[in-house]
Amino acid sequence: MPARQKYLCQSLLGFGAALYLFFTAKLPVETQLVLPFLKNMTITLGPLLFILMTYFVIVGSSNAVNLTDGLDGLAVMPAVMISAALGVFAYASGNIQMANYLVIPYVPGVGEVVVFCGSLVGAGLGFLWFNTYPAQVFMGDVGALALGAALGIIAVCVRQEIVFFVMSGIFVIETVSVILQVGSFKLTGKRIFKMAPIHHHFELKGWPEPRVIVRFWIITFILVLFGLATLKLR
Image (tube, rainbow, N blue to C red; front, side):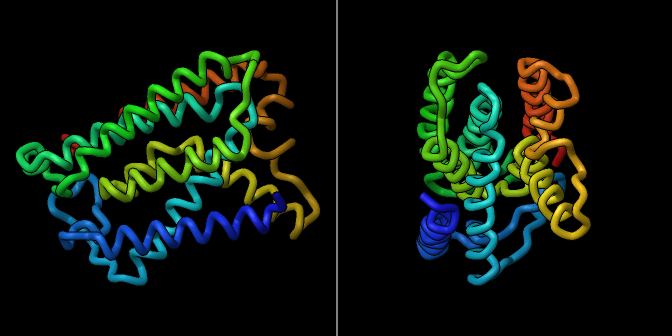
């Protein structure tokens, strides 16, 4: 499928999900932007900003995971760790006593999302068994795009888009490296990296593939721990 057709499908699904989440919201906090580290600090977005932000979170996350999926196991293990962390946020946000204690928004019913997060973790680990270097099976666009979109939707449901952005630092860096590479080449005719996404840059610098993969996993693990720490830093 050509890139434009894929992006069109992503956009339709992204806007559809954003509209559904907005019109099914029961509490004001379900359409507000929650600021981590700060107690009871939210920004009221309104219909337009909420729908646009949700769209960009879903579509951006979908493409970011797809861009990262260039080495064996590189995308799926960070996705597993982020899914597990979002499951913790979902459980806490769906429990009114725990949400009040941790000073995070209480979202009725979102605790059920833990089941889906657990499914992503289990499926991801099962897939990783065969996708680890050297890989026997591959995710492809269908898997990577869907996995990224699922993570984005969960982040919106639990109202932790900013924390999700932090925990997804590897996905963000991979995406930004592509944007910078393409922009620099079109504007100046020069490349910033040896190759984009950035994991290929490190490969061309002489890093063995397993070293790139594991070091990116370690970075994600640290970022996920930092994201989880925001539960208490409030």
